[in-house]
Image (cartoon, rainbow, N blue to C red):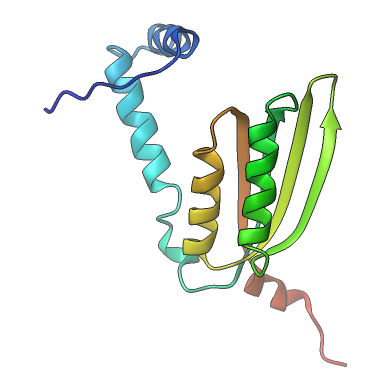
Length: 142
């Protein structure tokens, strides 16, 4: 197996070590391998390929980290044909939430979420994806 060196904050490393210990992993490498497999597999759902999808993406960040908010604004404009809606809200005393509603295909959603996750200083990125064509079963002809 190839050895890879990864830089991460001490706090994250401590959390990984604690998680490994509490959940019976043999060590941090096993936790990181599983996390990588899960991340890479997130958007490999064949059932969602070549379908029109909707996604909700929620991002939490510290409002004092202006680079995150600037990056969210740039992404919103860069993907304006793909971002159906965008909502910004203050959460607690120091945080902001950016919520994006997306309409497009799996590859577009995957790229958008990846760019948000790659944004330095985001605290949390969560999303859900659903096929839009699933709603046709609920429509009626007039």
